[in-house]
Image (cartoon, rainbow, N blue to C red):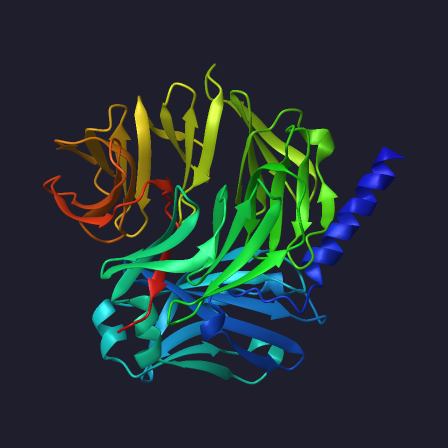
Length: 436
């Protein structure tokens, strides 16, 4: 009977994840373009530029043949102003015969992108169909890829939300008791108010006006994480004995993983795997097959937090002794172990992590590219830090004052006071402001 129930649940998952054709899969809807080749619908969008690589995501919908049999390096190429560039890498974000989502990577230098007029994605000979091209204006796209402003959403101790940028700060017309801030894309967040059991979908307009849509009141949840591809929330129940799958459209619980956990406290999602902490263990659950893939102990200390890096390369795990373990998300090998850390922040562009020491008066910078280590001494004490990506600047909340400051990471000096408010939630959810 149990096997039959499991089969029914797996079929339900396949129906939800495989045939939800009306759901948007692309991470940057603003640049999403759609074409049809024979009976295959394709949605495509550039998503990110880093280390001379331009990344695209493509979402396919068809009921004719198995699309996973294709070699996408041979089918897809890019060009800028009719000069062709080959795809150097591709991977499946969702491997499905009829509804796959893939990421492809083209090697392009920054100068070529910034001088060009038009970027195209060429699709050649797919399913025997004619060759097609999807194009974007580089004048518009470069504003997204190389922004003039970046910012961060924080809330102060009174619950008021602020948008902080490298060109100033702005109080937003939104107030709540915030327990979690989950980034969907650059101008869209989910904000969970545990006190009132409400999940708000927040959208920020180009003129920085807030639009807020409250999703159905949720049960009290211990921890939540957002799954981009299917617009689901994975949530740990208040007593930690259940993982719920919640549909964001209506707040309804679709599925649960009650048999796989007993006392979970933290959760993260990468690919089709959930990383869940129970006491001193991490359990890895495949949410498509409802199976426990792996369970591993990281010592005899209780795990207090799990976070993935913004590029998905690392898992950051902290325990009750404030030890930070950095794991590779591919094989879960421990890359670094840092003792007595108060807070940390990762720069996915420069591939480095800044770790605040236990006293808050020193920062250690680890560079993953060259394995270098650098110490920054401070003549003040910080409570939290957030590194501004691809820069030498850090946001920091002072430990003994109601102030948020901007810091030069090379000298450790405070450049200016940003906000004279006590910050309740300083997080790494950066946004891109396209104001070039």
